[in-house]
Image (tube, rainbow, N blue to C red; front, side):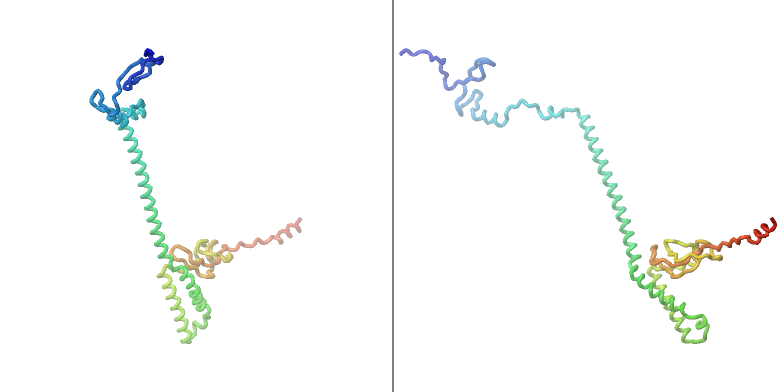
Length: 253
């Protein structure tokens, strides 16, 4: 049979291949090098493949252009300056707040240490007040006639009890405990506890007229309020009804 052209067109050599679609840029032939063979510029196909793998082509814009980073240096520096100033102000504010907190902590610690030193004996001093009260009651129970007598033993006993009371009060005072004697002073609800209120012509109203039990304080705190009686002032004169005058007037009419 005579050989003729193939109905599918001429057979291409194995070394030829299409470079692009015929509908776009027309038919273009190029000779592809054999695998591993030399190319036109002296490189091998393997070298070209490696270069294209390491540096693939892309149509995406650069990050600088896409993100709008291609601004002027002046605008960039102004933005950085604003950011640094804001960060500086924030750090300064934190520093000032920290210094203020530390100062408050130092003052509070000093106050707590001072209070601990001043009021450490509060419970012990409160327990000792009963002994001081008993010594005072013992002295007040001695009649005036016995005090004025010539009995040496009784006088020595009274002097011994008085000396013990004074030493106890001095010891308490060395530890910050002071006795309150508010006789004749203005009534203070922070220091005194009113037991009664009675009229007194000699003492103004609102003043302490009688001390029932002495009080004590430690530092600036009340250890025990003083039990006192408060004066209500001079008694008001009773208004006598003019019965006699009213009777005379009625008789005249």
